[in-house]
Image (cartoon, rainbow over all chains, first blue to last red; front, top):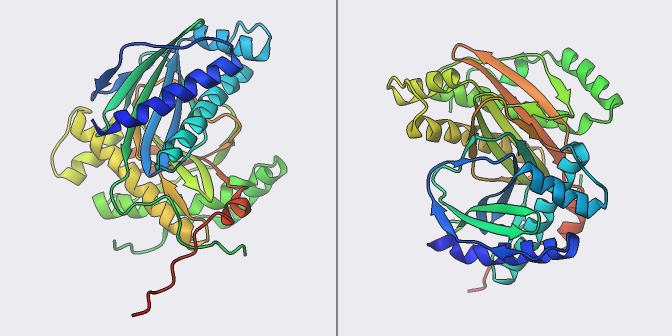
Length: 169
Length: 201
């Protein structure tokens, strides 16, 4: 599979970020590859990649896991998934993805990431269409984070580098 | 694509300006100038592909989350403009549009219909990004993601959303624009490669 090589940067980034921010060890569970639509858990953070690697990264986690992580990061007990908790979980996804893209760029694949989108609601279908997804379960002390990587190398001729200098008007 | 009349001509500019002034007071003006390329593109594409004439409804700005409709196409923009665009609509609207485009009556949201509506979102967003690039904002769009299921909440966090309802014969489609100009534009400029000089032969 072409996109397995994109997996390790995400696993490394996630374990580094979660260790630094939350202080939890991360174990990787069994990988699987899926073509059909995913069914969401309570919380899904969606971030798109554009550039030499393109596609979508989804982080699925339960409400308890989200609350546990945010409580630990902010050092404040959260019982409800309010806007601060939402922002915290989305930012965690953003930091992990950002760090992973830096690692990807070190291997020669530059890409940019979109701002995170947070989806709440269990049992929805999210389809990445013709992109197959690698599902990487990351087990933390607070519960499992399921990372869905629907990524592929950009077709030849597509480059993230712009070949001109913008002139501010 | 042949379009008889640009859709932006039909927009009631004075009404928009009223709404924009209201938005500006709330510090939410950034979004509004990206509106017309998307409305134009949606109109052009639905007209060219399916001969549906869409009409724009009342604009609104929201900061909170939104409750999803049955089908949502999610596409992100990255570049001089960063953010996410959602196209949300009921299943019946998808079936009506895709049936006409394919020339075949669809009755359920199968893989073909899903692929079709995601592609439609992709074409609209691609066309809008070309229109945006004419005004000096270059951005790249991500591949589409399709979300099926009503009643979930989607939040774009600190990005306010401009909501543009489009109504027409196939039903109602709502475009949510959560876009922001990239403030790092100047900083990025220093890293850009200058095109190579033509080779001497």
